[in-house]
Structure formats: C-alpha cells, structure tokens
Image (cartoon, rainbow, N blue to C red; front, top):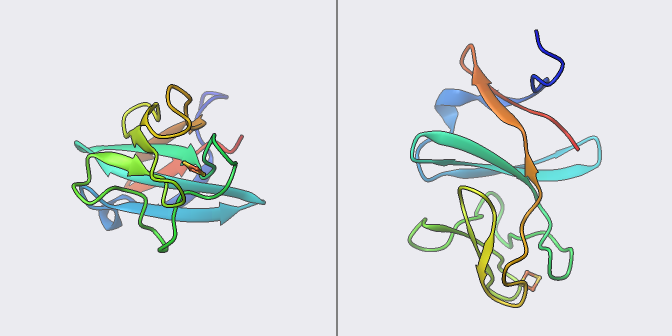
Length: 112
Ligand code: FES
C-alpha cells in the first residue's frame, strides 16, 4: 500500500449514485463527496468566500441541474471536477480538494 493511498473509509461505492452528493463530519473535518461522470470527487465543506458550509439541506451540494457545486448562502457555483468557483463572490477561488479513491467497493479519502 502506498503512503498516499486514502485510508479514511466514507461509505460503500454503490450507495453513491451518479449526480448524488453526501456530506461527512469526521475528526472535526466537514467534507463532502460527489459522484460525477462516474468518478467520485471530495472537498472540504467550506466556501472560500465566508468559510461556511456550502449546503442548507443535508447532502444537497449540487445546483438544480446537477452541473455545479452550489453554495446555498450566496449562490456561488463551483465546477464539480476541480472545485473552481466560476460564478459568485468567490469567483476564481477554489474549494479544497481531497484525495479520494474507490477500492474494493468502498470510497476512501485522505483527511487534510
Ligand atoms: S458563503 Fe458561499 S458564496 Fe458566500
């Protein structure tokens, strides 16, 4: 096993369907994952604008069309693939991305 392999198990892979997101609070880290185009991405759940959690409704991190990550507080939009803000008060800033991996039917991430 490589030293950089994510070791924190989040959930079973099959429970995160395409276009779904899910939040976690582990070891005082607020994070979320999204499955998008078959791949899972993970971010720290903190808007770069005001450092507040992105969601108002539990596990709802995407916009209506499920094309962007959405900050519910002021409406900023972030690309799902790399967490870059493309609209809103934190334009051109990014969410903190976490290393994530699916293996043996589970999703793992590396905590910051
Ligand atoms: S706190 Fe997210 S856009 Fe203002």
